[in-house]
Image (cartoon, rainbow, N blue to C red; front, side, top):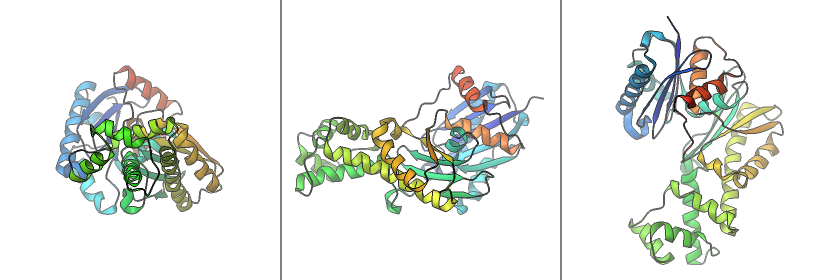
Length: 332
């Protein structure tokens, strides 16, 4: 009987389950709705997992008995009190293979680092940072609690600061910014006064998906936008520095994986991030995530079966997944 390994990337928008073999050949992919329990509850997590698994099994022409290991990266799985209900939800799938569940940030680390340890920084709609040591016995992390916990910057946090900047431009607390015009155009409001009125009364809204407007303004040389982008990069760097201190990585040579759509902004965001990290850990090497996070989930699945995949495994699996038509681009 063939052996397949189940990798699950469970997010706030989609749940993806990939079945693959030990050599990095994709066998079946299933895509369902949101699985983050903070968004859909644990019943919603169960539904999305079941739906995605059935799709993947059907595509692979496989049964649950062929699954030899499973790895689940779960968005919203941050605290010990969430372990039991998360594992109970996974348990409803009826798997007999060894299973591991981790925060979904770890998937970026497993997919993006050379040896499966180091740091991963997520900057998409929100932000997060986790780290693992070489033996996967020590973990470092931030809360993932956004501005409430003093953590930034994903697109959501960036937009909060950007809206504050245009409000300050109107009240005179801050300097004028092109963002005022760009936000008016985006919302259809005729001027800044009406924009602020609309934002305060709920007539219009600016959402995390509008964050590229801030980068557009920065490319146009707008001083306020340039400072916002630099702030975001430095804040992400501070998240990493916190985890570096927790892990004692200051003198280590290690990789920091950057994952999430915010990093599509390029060097304007990444350079202040790099400067902040290197001031704390000169041996850190920043790398963009090249493979879908679900590839990291398959690595985790192999680990549960006692298998350390070959160096080429990630690239082979990503290529096989793309041939299957399952290329999964990063989104905000």
